[in-house]
Structures are given as C-alpha cells and as structure tokens.
Image (cartoon, rainbow, N blue to C red):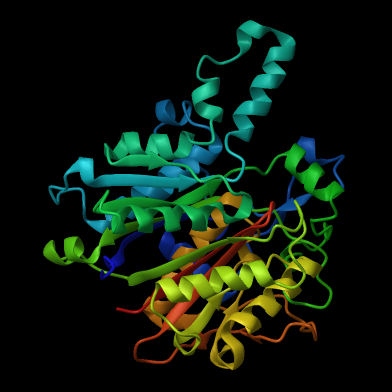
Amino acid sequence: MSKTRVVITGLGATTPLGGDVTSTWEGLLAGRSGARRLTDEWVQNLAVQIAAPVAVEPTEVIERVKARRLDRTAQLAVVAAREAWADSGLEDSGLDKERLGVAVASGIGGLHTTLSNYDALQQNPRRVSPLAIPMLMPNSSAAYVSLELGAKAGVHTPVSACASGNEAIWLGLDQIRLGRADVVVAGGAEGAIMALPLAAFGMMQALSKRNDDPEKASRPWDVDRDGFLLGEGAGILILESYEHAKARGAKIYAELAGAGISADGHDIAQPDPTGSGARRAMERALSEGDLTPADIFHINAHATSTPQGDIAESLAIRQALGKEADHAVATAPKSMIGHLLGGAGAVESVATVLALKNRVSPPTINVDKLDDAIELDVATEQRKLPDGDIAALNNSFGFGGHNAAIAFKTL
C-alpha cells in the first residue's frame, strides 16, 4: 500500500534570534548568537547566569487579556502557531475543522505558572490563580492552539524531554498517513529560563558556565565545549497531505518524508556512548521515507555542546550513513539559539526545511578547534547545497533515552 505523501505548507517561529521565521532564518545564516548574560535579580546567586531568551516578548504580540491566561510556554506556542497558520493560507480555504489536528509538544510545560502559584500558596492559598491548572498542564500549548484554530481531529502533546518537538512532528505525520486528518499543526514550545532549571541543570554539570562570554558559551563539536546553553522559543510546522495541498494550490516548502523513533535503554540522563539508539532512529527515518544515505546532504544535528552527547551523535551519524556521511553537511543551530528543550526539535525542523528550500546550510559558530572525535563535515560558514533531489535529517535526543529523527526532502 502506498504511503500518503505529507508536505510542509506553513512555518512559524519565535526564537532568541527573532520573533518570526524570517528574522530567525536571517540570524542563523548570519551566524548571530542569541545568548546573553541575564540581569534579573533572581539570577545573582546562581552559578550559571547566561541563557538565550526570545528576541521578542510574546506579551508584545498576544493580546493582554489572552496572554494573562497562558503560561509563557503556551504564549510562545501561540505566537508561532499564528504565524504558521497565516503562512499556510488555510484560514480562508474552507478546511473542514474535523480534519484539522494539533500536535504541540513541551518538555516541561507550565513551569512559570507552577512556581509562581506555589509561591502564592505559601503566602495565602486564596492567592492561587483559578486558572493555574489549565495554565500549568503540559498539554496547555496544544490545547490553546487548537482552541484558536477550532481544530477537532485530535489534540496531542508528546512529552519526551528534548525529543518532544520532533516527536510531535512524527505524530502529526502518522495522523495524516492514518487518514485521521488532512492537516496537522505540529511543533513544540518551551519557556523555562528560570532559577530552578538553571540551578538544576547546573548541578548536573550540563550547562556552560561561561558567564563572562555568553555568545561563546554554546560551542557544539569544539574541543573546549563545556555544556549547553538554555534557550527558549517555539517552532510550528503546518503538515498537510500532498493531495489536499495540491488541490488548493498551496505553497509547499518541502516534503516530510519519514520519521524514526527509538530508545536507548541506557540511562536517564546520559546518551548511549555507542550511539546505537540514535543510529536506529535515523535508519528508521530513512527507511520510512524511502531514502538512502546517499540522499542526505544536510544534517541538522542535536549537537547540544555537551562532551559525551556530541561524540555519541557523531558516531551514530557515521553508523547510519556510512561513507555517505562524507558529503552531508552537519550544522548545529544550538550554537546560536541555545537548547530550547521541548521546542528544540520543532524550531530546528523549521530551519531544516528552510535549508532545503533555500539550498543552503547555516553555519555552526564557536567551532574554534574541532574535536578529533567528531568525524563530520561541520559547516562553520554558510554552505551551498546541490541542485536536484536532496534530503535532510533533523535529530533530537532527550533525557530518558528518547531518540527522534525526522527526514525531509525537496519537492
């Protein structure tokens, strides 16, 4: 039985580089860092005082009354979803909303709401917001996006740590191929730049402590990398069956060819050092997309800037692609936007789609000396991609051993 073809017809994003897709993409191509030293009073006693906040506050975009009913993570998701929906041209298409689904992920959920209401509880239980539960739920972002758009085919929220955004895209792909929807609004969001995550990740020795040089802190694949940089933001893709998109004359960015999901079964926080779980995810994405390693010319790597993780992924890519990895350009957006946790895979899928559409790989910054253990063709400046039919992989891996690889191809 032939598979239903699924394409990308809309993109939305809000990131440390810009409040929309255009400014984010321009920032990535320019190799601009969104990192900065935080100046909030609560950060003064923390060992890690740097992060990559969004460039545009969501409260500047969302109506004040609505923004007050949303946790920061959901605010970011709504901003990106509105842009993607407008970009798709579906608003006036006559789409049957019972054929419209939503899959928007989060790695943590409504942390701002949880912590602020816990503080209120300590002072006076009557100060707890009556909206606290709907705001702190991990599915809040997906729910509010569905309410805005009137989506009735199903609303889903994968919560798989840093693989969550890619898992949402995988789930959207399945919903369309299973015939349960014609269109799915898919992606992820995270707004968790707060004292608790910074302190907790810091105690794990997972974060860079380059407080005096934040723009150099995230340095995937560099021999002197010392941990990741916490970022925030959201990315949304409009997934649509090819036949549905073609029938309405939609603009198409690329085809979502396949997705691969696997688990390490190794450790709650550390990746399998052999890279076998990540390898299986990539191989499954290729197989499901009817692709071969020779088709892959661009790899958006997970590449968080942690010593163990970068090496394990490099091994996995080599195992999955073999000698064909030699012609695949590897790039790491986290060098500029930091790690967006549950939003990472989605924002980087947006970047991967644009890399194929524009046939250019963005650079990876801060690679002053490539680690000898990294056997990849790392782009440290813009790299042109070839003409013809080509494909790309976007990798996301999360605590718990979650692995999610997404394959896109030109159309």
